Length: 266
Image 1 (cartoon, rainbow, N blue to C red):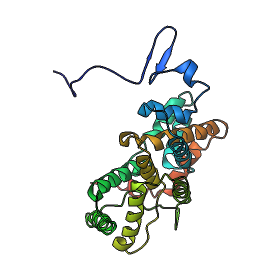
Image 2: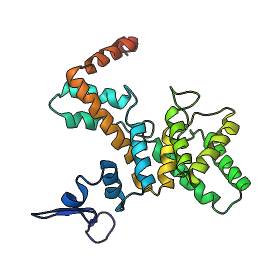
Image 3: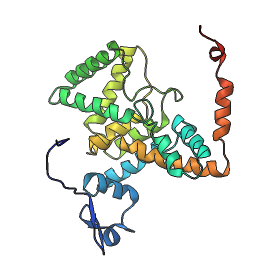
Image 4: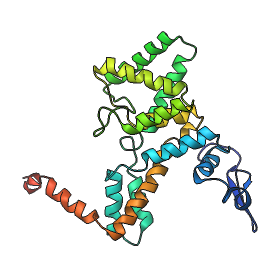
């Protein structure tokens, strides 16, 4: 019995022979190595197209914006894993990346999905009608007990400086399109629905700008994963020379009340 969708067994990404490696139709050695940046290569690898200047610029900027945020849960996990298995860098990196979900680093994908649905529902409508659609969608989320994807941050208030910078660059470089416009409508709608401004998280403009720059929606979650991989490797390099993983584990023991563990149930 066949599992999965039927179709031709094929890949359009890469092949190799004794003398060459071909990636998306380009000879790796002569056309890509020393010619394109890693960001340009990544865009080509994912999409099959060479990036425009704005696509290259913003993919680079977005990767930088989300690569580092201190001793996050993903970083702590990676550092402690390396201390437990110092011979397995790959395991420590993987342990950190496994923590990239809907709460940590996955919000860009959720925000992009919201904006795509909003774009479909507002296509061809007037400015006032677009505002009403966005307001209705925001109310639906609030009344359903949900959170508005891409909004809210436990540390940055009243604004996330990364989000502010990214949106200002998008405006200045003419990269703000329908999805950035909808994001700003959701920002205004949130004030009405929640009764207060909600912090625009960096994840929101990442999703909006990638959509406006025609980046595949299915790969949007990969941007924070790729970026945070670089950040984790930096932390692990430091961990080898200045280990703090076990120290963080001991501090967790000190911070948690273990009184419940002493109770014996009949």
